[in-house]
Image 1 (cartoon, rainbow, N blue to C red):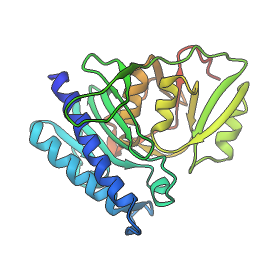
Image 2 (cartoon, rainbow, N blue to C red; image 1 turned 90 degrees about the horizontal axis):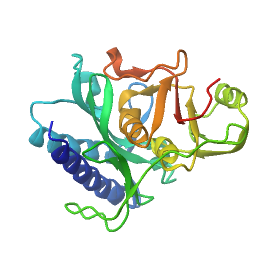
Image 3 (cartoon, rainbow, N blue to C red; image 1 turned 30 degrees about the horizontal axis):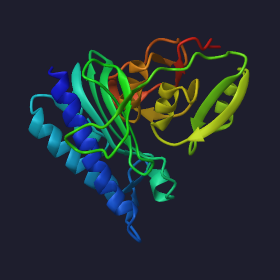
Image 4 (cartoon, rainbow, N blue to C red; image 1 turned 120 degrees about the vertical axis):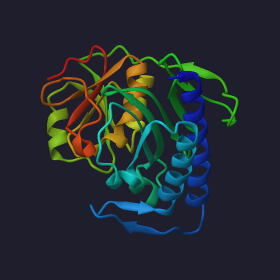
Length: 263
């Protein structure tokens, strides 16, 4: 794989999808309906999915492409694939809270090697470079020319005063009980895959997820966090979270900075 080309394409498509999403987000009204699993989907999800899918298929026709909005049509598993959540955090989008992201990732042999996470309403763009390091880009977000890049590295955690980030829309008692096992300095809530990125930047040390997620929800953020020196492991056995699983369901997981002592 030509990672320089891959990263450039993923970045450009994420930015273009972000523009389309913001057009709809800033409109007076937009359509919302429920999918079969009762989760919400909007015209922004579908427009971003169409844009990203067309772009990836044109650039990488030989790669399997998995997207949230088309997942029902993908029954064959693959070792190497692109996986997309065109709008992660639809509930945040519907409630106009801004914590939603565009997510594109490349997975090889169960590992998300490259990824991009773009939060258009917050003006934050995170991705892995062609070499796999994690960065945050600032500036004008020109589609073809990257702006200034800040290398990302997880914080050195203080296990007597951890900074924890948890889901804004899906936090429950089980999550609070698990967090209660740790010495926590402060806890904050965030939506979508931004939680991975907050650990990657050092703004948080630890993100536990004791709830249902799908691989497209996590792959891009997982890639960014790994590129910043962090880890994403299963809650049950602390083994690395793997991708390409039947049904695309994730187990409960922990995303954390190196040095956090898991319990």
